[in-house]
Structures are given as C-alpha cells and as structure tokens.
Length: 366
Figure (cartoon, one colour):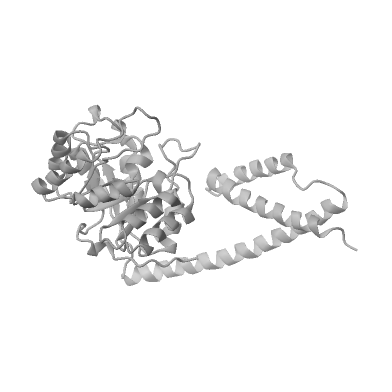
C-alpha cells in the first residue's frame, strides 16, 4: 500500500547538485580538529558539498571510542567557515538534536539502531518540531520496512518535510561477504511505496571493507538511487573507528568518477516502444503465474483433505527437502539462482501449509 508523506524535493534543499550521485562524505568519526579539517580540505578540493562526521558514536561494547561529543561540533563549524561545505552528523536523542541546532549543523541523519526504536524516534521528532533542517533516516538494523516508514511518518508529522533515507543494509547471520546484507529489495519496495523519497546508499556500512565500495555504489546507481554516503578519512590506517571501510579523499574521487550513471527514464521512441512490448510480455507471464499458483493451491487443499481423512500430519519434512533440492537442480537449467528458488518455493510451501491447516480446521466432510 502506497504511503503519502509531505516531502520537499531533494533538489530544493540547497545542498546537492546534479548530475547524480549526490555525495555525502567524511570520516566515520570526528577524532581531532586536525583530522576533520584535513579530510574536509581534501574532499572540498574536488567538489564535495556535504561533509559528514560522527560526533556521538553508538558502539556495541563499552570502552570503545564513542566519539568526542559536543566539542566536535565546533570543528564542523570550522569546516563550514573554511571550505564552504555544508555539514551533517548523526543524532540519537533530543540532546543531540538541540546541540546540533545550536551549532548550526545543516543536516542530520538517524542511525539504524535509533530508527528501530519508536520511543527514540518520537523523542527526536518532538525535538525537531517545525524546524527546517533536512533529516535522513537509515534503515532499521532488521529488514522491517514498516518500521522504517513509521520512523519517517513520526518526523513528517512533526513538520520535518526535507526527508530522505539512507540504505545501509541489514544485520543478519548470513550477510557474507558484506558487513551487512544489502537487502536491495527492501529499498526498492520503499521506492515503490513512496516514489518521491530520495534514497542514499551507504556502501561503507553495507560492505564493511573498502574493496566492496565500488560494486555496491554501482549497484545503487543502477537502481536509480539519488546519492551515496561514503566514509573518507585523511589517514584511514589510524582511524579510531571503522578503519577498514574508509577511503582517502583521492580514492573516493576515483571511485565516484568510475561509476556509470544511468538515466531513470528515457523519452527515446525506440526505447519506449521496446520497453512497452517487453512489459506487456511480463504482464501476460505474471497472469499465467497467478493461474498456476491458484491451481497449485487447489491441489494443496485436496492434499489437506486427504491427510485429514487418513489422520496424517500436514508437514513431512523429508518430502519437502527432496522437493526443494529437485527444484534447485532444475532451476540451474533456467539460469535461476538458488536463493531465488528457495525464497519462492518456501513462500509457496508456507501458503500450502496455511491452506491445509484450514482444511483440518474445517473437520471431516459429512
């Protein structure tokens, strides 16, 4: 179901310029005035307009470097004064918001741990009541799209209209090789529900290693995202947090210049005619799929009745494991990935079990 938010287009925020990608860059953490300014100078030299730095750092374990706190906001003011760049940082509670507003921070972002907490989101929304400052919201740590949208709704109801999101991936057991599983489909679904919402990708936290930054950034551009938030440090080797995923400014420039930027649409007549024909084929195929799904579930209903009448349990794990392995083997001939087949057939299996459970609850036929 589509959601409606009252959003100011990102092109009217006064921070970002076309062509894509709109880039937000800077160190994971503000560590010292010298480190912040040196990094900012390197980024400003080739046209970055928005400088990021973590002032308060949410860390998993106590005793780790948790940011310099409010004194670091004075360093961001110096970045603005010296380079003309706009500055942004992460906030996690109302105190952070008030300190940022007091020190003239231009944009805020809300981290994955905070966006997952409705209590903190409401606290931040109340602190931002009727302010004009832009806010980007990172996806929650778990792949819960409604929770992500709920965080946006709380801010929007408080009058925050310059809204966007940062897709940084999700914390899962099977995120390898990346630090966080990309879960691109969640961001694509968000774009479907709220088309006007600008989306930035965070390949630094998604990849967790600089060797993955280019491929993840390119994927974000291929999906039509508006921008990128990438971590850059003047000397990553001595960074106090996330050293492995940060680039020096010159490396970041090389990465950005390597990206192939695709248009979101085209008015070319040949393109529109060709894509229209292909989409019509997709529509017919999808309709056929629905018919086949309906037929399959009708067979599942009959199987449920058969099991009920013979007092047999609904789920036979051995049978399903054999079916899944067989489907994976056949899928290879069609160029389909095992992950796709697992997702599709597990969903079919769950629906089949639901239907058979319904048959059992109906009781035996008279």
